[in-house]
Amino acid sequence: MTYHPKFDPARDFDPTADLQLTRDFMHEHGSALASAAHLLGGSAAGGRVLRFIEAVKESGRITRAHRRELSYLHYLLSLENVGNPGSLEAALFAEIDLSSPEVEDICLLTYLLTELLERIAAPEAASDAATAAYLGDAV
Image (cartoon, rainbow, N blue to C red; front, side, top):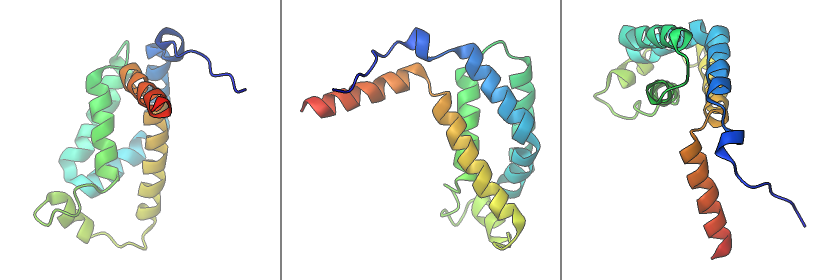
């Protein structure tokens, strides 16, 4: 029989630890993320990443706004809007040489950002996922 510890948001989610993980991630990858965002979303996207880096440095905790910015960045790096022919992202993506090293960097950054998002998942999202998994097993 496999033992599954009871889900405890107070124990399993530490907003201070989430903030530190985010700060560490942005410290290590922030410059590359800003460059990738600029390449895929223009100067506004690059600037948005730089403002996010500063916001995380000055914050005392991870906020919903921080999570939204990380989700936006993941959306951008995942090329979600590239299929929309009228979008800025589609136009900028069309200019990228797919054999350039930047493409590999974007893929790696997307993977690393996905890992960060999974590690700092909001308690309510994890709780909903745990509930869905439980109910799925019970049906």
